[in-house]
Length: 294
DNA sequence: AATACGGGGTC
DNA sequence: GACCCAGTATT
Image (cartoon, rainbow, N blue to C red; front, side, top):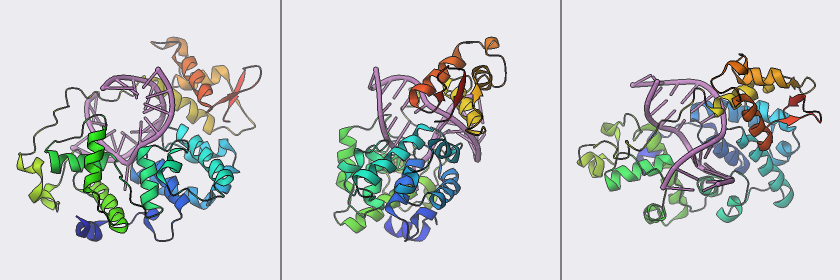
C-alpha cells in the first residue's frame, strides 16, 4: 500500500513540502464534505489572500463568507475564522500539534484533529475519514460500506493497524485515504488496480452489496431548508456590504425568485432566514428591515 | 443513534 | 434523480 501511494499519489497543492500547518488546517476544514476538485482552487486563492491565522483573523467576516463562495456549509467558514482568532491570540499564531488542543478549536472534530496532527506536524494519529473506513471495512470485514456511525470498536481496530513509527504512520494514513479516493471508491471500485485486492475480504467474498442500503436514505435537496438557506446566502454574497437586502427581497430569493406565499410551505423562507440569523451567517439591521452578511 | 447542515458532479 | 463527497455539532 505504501509503495502504491508513493507511485500514485495525486499532486495536490496542500501536499507541497512548504505548506504551513495553517494551510493544512484550512484545507482539512474545506475538505469536510466538499470534494477535492472543488477545494483545490478555493484553497489556493484563500492561502494567497490570507496566508496566516493573523491575516484571516483580521478579515471582515463578510469577505470570508464571499471567499468561501459555494464550498457549502458556510458555518465552516465562520468557524475557520474563529480558529484563526484563537490560534492567533491563544497559541501565539502556531497551529497546535496535539489532538486534544486541536479538538478544542471550533469546527475541528475527531477526523480533522487527527489529520492536522498527522499531516501538518508529522504526529502519529488515527485518521479515520470516510475513505479509510471504507477501505478497512472492505479489506478486513468484507463489507461494501462502513456502518452509518463510527463506534469505539471500529476506532480501536483502525488504531491497531497504524504503524508504530510516526513517519510511516503519516504515509499510511494518507496512503489509505488516497487509495479510497482513487481506487477503492464507493461507487465503482477499481479492484484490478488495487494493491490490497489479493488480501481483500470483500473481493474474496465476491464483492457483496451493502447491507445497510435499506437504511440509508438519500439526502434530500430540492425544497429543503438547506436549499433555501443556500439561496439566501448566495443572494447576500452578491451584494456589497453597503447595500443590504430588504426582507421581502431576501425571502423571495430564498423562494427561488418566486413569491414565498406560492410555496407549498409559505413559511419556509422566513424560517430559513431565522436559522441563518441564529447561526450568525446573516445579521439584521436594528429595525429588522434590512439584512446583510456579518 | 439520528439529524441538520451546501452544493455540484456523475452515472 | 439518486448517490456521494478528507465531517461537525447538537439532540
